[in-house]
Image 1: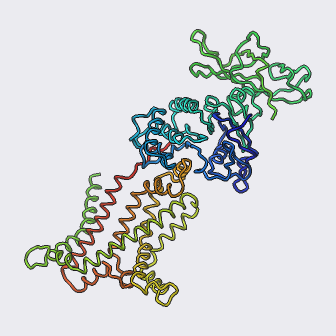
Image 2: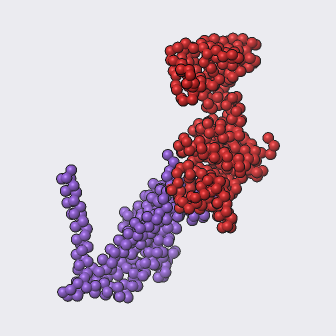
Length: 355
Length: 263
């Protein structure tokens, strides 16, 4: 990557004996939207707070725009931050909140007024400038918080689970809005979330974190389709894990309950008889035989869940219980639990989990 | 159910009588200075007494100074403890409760011993020094009320996140205190201020033993030598206290309302 705008090098953070972030390295391009994704306690918020300056790293450096900001206080870093709890100042109007950073920076009143109006237009709350935070809904408050964070044109925008407290519908519309605004302004953004759907739908790149480490850094497509570790594979999306045994490493064949599959030349270094974990996304499995799919096993339908546009079917294959998704069609009735069924897949869609 | 309500009214009536009868009696007595008719003569005599004006004025000035010093001491301390030293809260709570269990006479004897004219800081040697000593004594006496009022105000807002939000927008500590924290606990500060005012106006022990011309010693002096004026003064003192309580209620209506919190 040429000239990263935000560069995090060898960052480690420990609270007493507990290490919460370790060996964290990341380069972010200017204007890029990067998500830190992981379960609770994985260190993603701590890492964000280190970038913001609210936590001091035990080791490592943070550079923004070519300047080492590791030792700088949060108010010297020129960052904008949006919090999960909105954190609007209750004593100020919406306009007062948005203009706060500019006022602190000593900008002239006319400039503040014009920038506040611009930001209100951007978040489509032009009529709300004189209202107080308690007069706004959660979604509106978070949009104001976003406008406030961006009003002073920060170098980096940090979003700490900004959508977690909102209801599902608002969450979806607001994430689209945030992404659109971020693209429009071209602001370098780090977004912390535990919601994989949010991360996948909004990000240019995702950093999947686990136990304080970056397990994998990649585009949403790479993270979903080529997970680097067992954790990433399990955490991002639904995954069917099938335990098998290598039968012929050279031919790339693996025996699994209900049949055998070929995984091509991806068994290099493995021996015959060795246990191997294979994984398949639900959407990669089809009910019945399908042309062009080289994997075929037989099992028993255990459960059928109607999810509207999609029907999720659970099929027992040996000891494994595989989930597969099939589109709902009014013309054909859904499968019935207890029936025997063939399921097919392409061996190229099959993931081999190393760790 | 009906019977329960009956007894509730009875107990309420007993309570009201217990508190109001002495006040009504005192008020009625204060109006009897002129023989045979009700009049405000006692109030007139008190209000136009130059000593009343001097002592009341002195106590008001002392109360204002106490409020300023108390706010400057308590707001940053309570804020910092909430933000960075939460484990110290029980210690602070205990320390601020001490003035309720240590009698003012003990405090003032301690002061006189520590700050007399032969000590290393002879505050009692001058009138100004003694005024300062008295003011700090009042700060101590009002600490339980001032601290609790402000701490309650701080509890109503998310101090940590608001501070971080302000920092991320470039604000330093003074800006955060002045523009974010103080306006959001302003009503709590005012509540503490009015309570402090009410305490200082009627305080006797510290002022009397430090020999300062405050309203409390004046009340005692008039009470010992006059008949109707002390009753009028008592009613005035009650009116001031209740006025302060009413002001707390009024200003609390103008408190910044916290927005709906995420759930």
